[in-house]
Length: 125
Image (cartoon, rainbow, N blue to C red; front, side, top):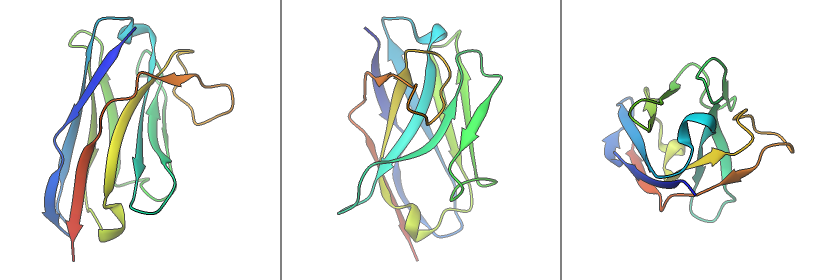
């Protein structure tokens, strides 16, 4: 069972950047897809970005496309979410999770699990 821990959140002004990290311990991180999700106060959790097990395919929510970049370093057992041009509406608790089926897509076929505790991102206007 993969265990995940997020870090890198913080307070940033609109237009700024942050890089989130998701460190895996134990399990089969290298054979799993990786996803980043977020949950704003009073809202449901939503998919932000996903990457397949090898890193060849990436998927983004329309709201973050061209601003966020997901990546995965299997050798280090770490995933990343580079967030640029942050906006107040990006404020949320960000979580990473693995897709045990490997694809990393936001689809009914995904098997998301091993959720981390989350890291808070707050963007001020």
